Length: 193
Length: 348
Image (tube, rainbow over all chains, first blue to last red; front, side):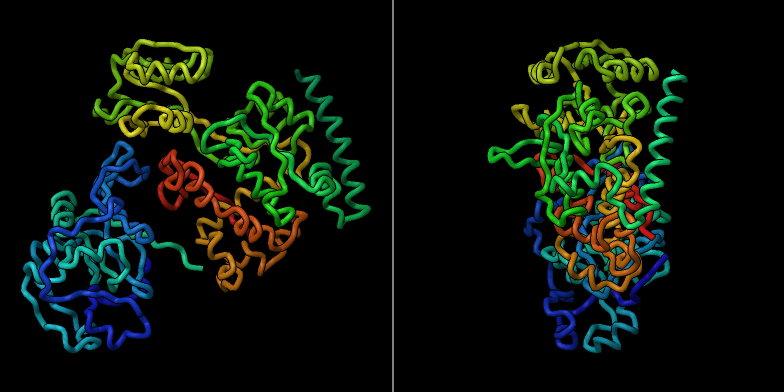
């Protein structure tokens, strides 16, 4: 397992101030914003069954960050594909993990590293529609990374997070039902030159 | 047969010895062995292609050839001449293609040809590496809601007569204890028409052909090619035996394209790749080692291929994949590291 960056999932819009040079376009997380349910995803990022060859067992989650896709292997040469938002430059990692825990409308406790970087963030935010973690979270191993929902559906298909994978709330709720604790998660990055 | 073979081998050995002596006399002259020298003197690669298979080789209205097989010859030309246009395309029909190559009518055959043992032994040819893993598959109307080929019990199957396809069909259904009725037609277009007219429940042919023929149906999106592949049809470029220098160029051209995809080098970032300090990328780009020169080419041979034609994934997507009308999933042709079986030995 290779973890290139130990950055924390969520990045605040306010972080633009400190990262103005490093991340010129950053529409990070906005605590308190309520998701616009009417955002229409690009067809490429809508949930759909696709033909997908893999040697991994049904139930395995494969994340291909370059294409902004998350696959749940179905067997029979098929996979269910979801559109995702991924980590921005410098906040990418790849490897093999397992789903360690699942939660509905998760609370958000920004970890100390994140508070140190962005002191203005709330120390705790209860789960709910305004929470950047969205409707569900699937925890990845013992890392700080999650597969979670979002209160900003228009960020699907972009690379703005600090290493987490976000889906629209409908999709993450659907994924939550399909993927068991213990399921294997494979994260693939585009190779670097 | 044995007598014939040993005579042929004896002659070959003679040629080999002679070649070795010549090579020893002028060790720098790696171009001395046949095809590469002729190609350089001619100023173009002679490339045998199909007479028209969408996605693989089709002549465009302006006379410019397009397709996956076409691009492979362009890649060889790029490696040699740093110019992907230095190719003369020679359309060859299925029946004569191997004899034409054997007779020296072309330098490479790049024409959706299945690599099989008898084709190498009978025609004295060599398939350097698999460029496209094809195989026999089934097309069904989407509305039938079928998940896989094992659900085809009791089907009426449209198939081309006089092909290995029809034999494979029989074997597959018998082996899996499935009943079926055959509807045979002489050519592939007739099979397709019968299927479209609803005369049969499914249509079997090689997957690449099914994807191409699906485009000709009234409503292509109403049909799906099932993911089951029931035979091995490894498509590969072909060269003559006993010209190892040429064979090596053809083989490593393909492997350079596959390695480039794996390393993330594309036609778009090739300049950036030339400045990379990553050892794998440096060996590919020729900024470390002299791998290209050892092939009889230049150090930047692979950079030329990637710049002029692209890496394997780019060529696949543009001609037969998501960037094309065919939209064939990568499937078996995905890289080994992503669930497929495309795998190139390392350049080192």
